[in-house]
Image 1 (cartoon, each protein chain N blue to C red):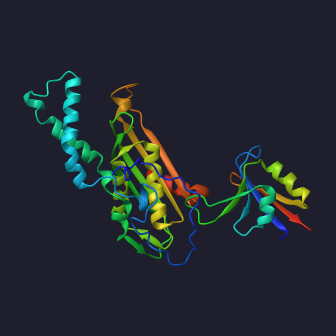
Image 2 (tube, each protein chain N blue to C red):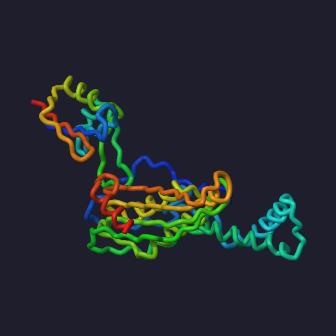
Length: 236
Length: 84
């Protein structure tokens, strides 16, 4: 378990082999070792781990309640440690899944090379610094290179990475990298706009502020016109 | 291989400078101190140096390359060089 524990990072890459356009691309197989995330990631948590760690999580929440000055024995809080533990496991269920699980059957060879955009994907994540939610929308666009992805799978990729202890910048990049590694498209663009409860409920307490991050790869990075088309389409 | 294209983006006072593509002369790339890389998302390899373009142009002149033309493409500055 310790060896497979995810740091929710991604390995620094020296430079992947460049795929030759027009030749058949091998599907990336799951579990082929390597970094702790993405295609080759091992699942750092399983359903079994969830059940085994639930009692200790609940006990930890009881300790927290007591340390906060509450009485865990009062009626309203009796089952709270268990509920909070289950909820936290749900909020971090992204650690139980890998991209390969989700995507292997949904990559299709299609002679399509125009932009595909899925926008306004709702995203709920946890700030890793305060363990407080940040909530927003994700817009994804990519230019296929003879391979397209099932549209719901883009939302599933967002789910896998957002249901973790996250930083918005890293989340954006992980989504873009996952799509790039899966499809080797001509380019990928990911834009996230989110409201961070850690800024709304505490600290500076600015309710109307939003954080926007973007990652552009391939032609989305190199070609201003492609980027402009993507940004225009997600705005409208 | 008489022709060479080097480019930089936004400001010419600072690098990185792109000095070659996948099929560039490896000896020349080594002379310039260039590193080969494939940026994530791109389907091509490129050679780059961290030096400003002026440094690269001076190095290339010392081995016989002369600037033929220069242009700007969007925010990219491109120099075309040729060696007799």
